[in-house]
Length: 536
Image 1 (cartoon, rainbow, N blue to C red):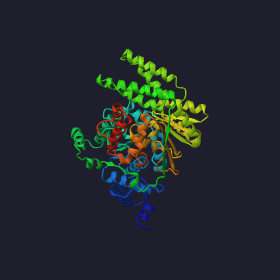
Image 2 (tube, rainbow, N blue to C red; image 1 turned 180 degrees about the vertical axis):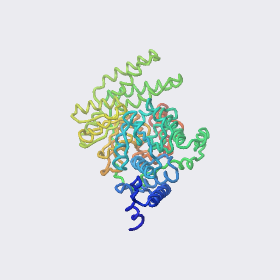
Image 3 (cartoon, rainbow, N blue to C red; image 1 turned 120 degrees about the vertical axis):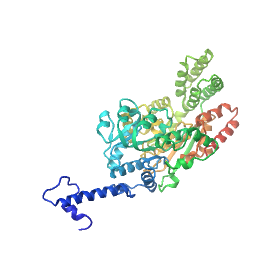
Image 4 (spheres, helix red, strand yellow; image 1 turned 90 degrees about the horizontal axis):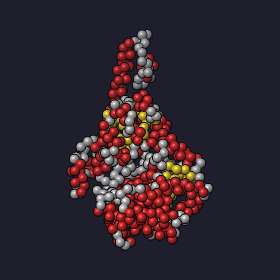
C-alpha cells in the first residue's frame, strides 16, 4: 500500500462515528489528516474542477479566466469575453471550484427569464452541481444553489427574501442590464449580502461610459475613483484602462484557441414600391419638421426616432406608432391633422416589398432560420405573412413568460423553420443547431448586432454561418447598413474590437442628429463617416 491507503482500509474518511473496536488514536489521526487535506485544498492553485469533471474540456482562455478570478481577483470580476466564447462555462467552473474548496455553500445565479432552465440544466449536466430553478419563495428558503429570473427577484416578495440572506457567491448574467444605477436590479445587487460577485456580459459598454462605472462600483466601490473624475479623465483622454483591466477579464476571438466556422455576409438591397416610397418620404418630412420644434420646446424626440426607424422596418409598425402618437393630449391641431394624414397614406400601401423579399429568401434557404426585428408590430405582421405563405414560424420576445420562451425554442428546434425574434433572443440563448440569420431591420446600436449573430456563431457551431442584412434603398436604413458594414466593418471584425466605443451621447441619438441636420445624401455620408471614426 502507498500514501494513505493503509489508513483508508482501517478508517475510511466517510466513516463519521467512531468505532469502539478500532484504535481511537487512528480515528484522531484520520480526522487530523482530513483536516490537513482540506486546508491544503483551499491554497493549492491547481484547478480541482478539472480533476472532478474529467469530461469537461475547457479552452485555454477559460482556464486562464477561472484561475485569475480565483487567485488574483478574489472572486469579484467582470467576465466580458466576446459573444460565443463561453462565459457560462467560466462561471460554472468558478462555482464548482469554490464548492470543491468549501469556500462557497450558498449561491444565487440571476439571469434573464428565458435562460433560467438553460443555466440550471448546464450546471447539472456539465458541472454536476445541484442547482434549482426558482419557482417560489420556498426555493430561496430551502435550496443552497438557486438560479432565478432577475426580473422576478428584483420585485417583492422575493426581493426581501434575497436581501435577508447572506450569499457566498452571486452570479449575474447579461449584467449590462444593470448599466444604470437607478434600476431596481442594480440597487438589489448593491444591497445584497455577498462575499463573491461575478458579472457576465459581452457588451460591458453599450452607449455611455457611466455604464462601466456603475458595474465596477458593484464589484469594488471606489475602484475607478469619483464618478466625476472618471468621466473627466475620459473626456480629457486620460487613460483609466489599467484600473479597468484589474477587474475586467475580456478575451477576443482572435486571441483564443477556439476555431470558429466562417461567416458569410450578404446585403440585400430592396427597392420600395411607389406607394411605400411616398409614405416613407412623407413620414420623413413630418419628422424633420417636428425634430427641431420638439427640441426647442423640450419635448421628447424619442417617438420621432422610433418612427424613423420603424418606417424602414414595416408600414404596419409605423402605423402602430402613428396611432400611439395620436393619443398624445399635448398635440396641436396641426400635428393631429398631419398624423391623421400619414395614417391615411399608410392605409393605401398594399404591397410590402421587404416582407415579400424575406419570404422568397426563407423559401430559398429551406433550413432553420432566425429572423430578427426590433419591433413587436413587425414581428406579428411577419408571423401573419409567413402563415399565409405556409411557412411554419414561431415567435420569441421579451414579453413571454419563461415557460413559453422555452416552449418556443423547442418548437423552433424540432418543428418550425423560422424563429421570428426581437432582441430578447439576442441575449444568452444558444441556437447552434441553426446557421442562418436574417436581419430584417438593424438596431442602430452596433453593440447589439453581434449579440444577434452570437446566438449561432459560437462554440459548438459546426457549419458556416450565413448572415443576410436587408436594406431599403434610398432610406436612412441604407446609410446605417453602410455605416456598420463598410465604415465600421462590424460584421467582419466582430464587436470585441469596438470596445472603446462612443462618447457621452447615445449612438442612436447621434445617428438621428446626423440624419436630421443633413440636407443631402453627401452631407449625411460625411457626418456618418465622422461618427464611424469614433468606433474604430
